[in-house]
Each structure stands twice: as C-alpha cells, then as structure tokens.
Image (cartoon, rainbow, N blue to C red):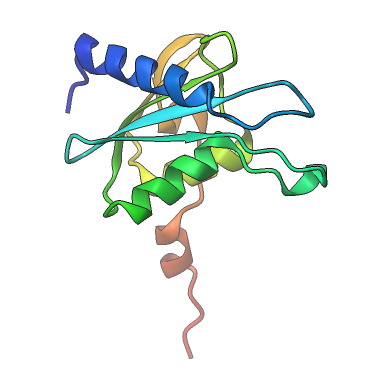
Length: 137
C-alpha cells in the first residue's frame, strides 16, 4: 500500500494534536504519534510521565494500546513528533512495539525522511522467531 501525501498530512496533524495532550511535567518533552492502520483508521498515542520516572509510558505504547482497544490490525504508516512538531525517531523499545504491530514494509517518518520498519530495526526479532526456535520434545 502506498501512503499518499494527504494521508501523511493527516498523520502529522493527528500526531501534533495528540502531542499537545501529553503529560510531561518532568521532562517537558511532549511526544505524539499517529499510525495509519490497514483498514484506514488513524490511531494515536502520547507520552505519559510519572513521578517515578521509570514507569512513564512512551507515546508509541499508548498508540499500540489504542490499536488493540479499537479492533487490532496492522500499521501501514507512522508519524512520531516532538513538542515542536518535528519528526522524532522512536527509541529501540518502541521500534520493537511498532515492528510487532506493523509489517516489515510499514513506513515511518524519520528525521532522515520516510523509511520502512526494516530500515530502522534491521534483523528484528518477532513472533516468527519464537515459533522457529520453539523447543520440541
């Protein structure tokens, strides 16, 4: 599936809109993410910090929860933005979450342009690896 300019614009607007809802009183670093699903709907997430820093939630975690809460499916395209609306590269943990909820060809905006999940998470580990390495007796 090719993502149109109009769809990328809609994702950017959704990511910026949800970023404004982020709860980031400690870092002051708000993040928003929007994903286009294979059925055409857009799901969003924002970061949520906590006074016990280690238990904060990344925006991507919120979006993945929204994916499953709204019926599941696979990500086709993703935009993640910082508090200024600039493209933001997800951390390694979040790349793994996106991988499992997308496909190798899912597209994502990055500071270097649009890339696939395979490009930002080469040699990814996923559900197929668990099956392939399952112990048999």
